[in-house]
Image 1 (tube, rainbow, N blue to C red):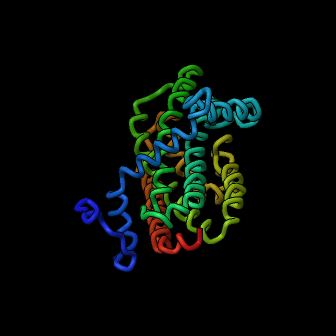
Image 2: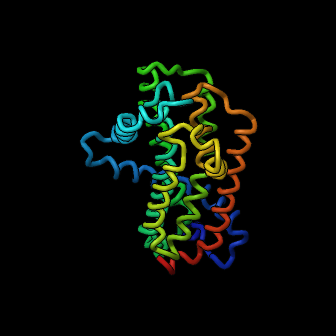
Image 3: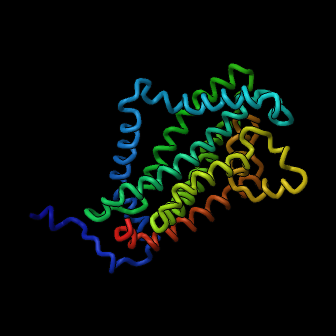
Length: 279
């Protein structure tokens, strides 16, 4: 009986600043989030013959298709040498973003029944999706390094800043995930519309083609206002180019990430108490 009495009781009426309270709850329920990540990883590969190898084979397969289809078309400028590594580098960053934001939205919508039974921080679904995506991203770096070494793209010391690039990309992905998840709770069609938007967004981001193509004329505006173009570059510079991003490039990426994360966190936590009634 003592153990039951000592358990924390959740009362939404006594919540203070929702955004700040959610951070405290996430820290308190950190072990639950870890279990959600374990569940996602286990469920994804449990019945797969190749298991976790699919995490590496997925971007490799896309890289091979794009290399065969577009290597002669886009092998210009920055992508002239080692086109396969150029594509795979951008693909890893993009797949992390697209898969985690989609998974966060799906997890919240399909896991919404839990909100009517027990209390868990609503952001747990998005954070767990990001955690799973980070694991996949780290594993995906292994075949990228192999491809780079095989085709002669040197691996330089600048690779040490990749964790910072990943952190900035993670913040942006979590912010978008929270915004999209909030919309999906109120408007179910957002799930389908987001997939269409992702396809268009991917082709507007320099993944299969060099950024130089969009740096002249009216297209340069698309490159400037596309946040993923900046974040993919932060991810690609240390690995593919072997260069450290400049201070201004770090600053742009950091501002994009923090602004989107803050906006997503505030909007999501402000509406979170209504989710149980709408899912």
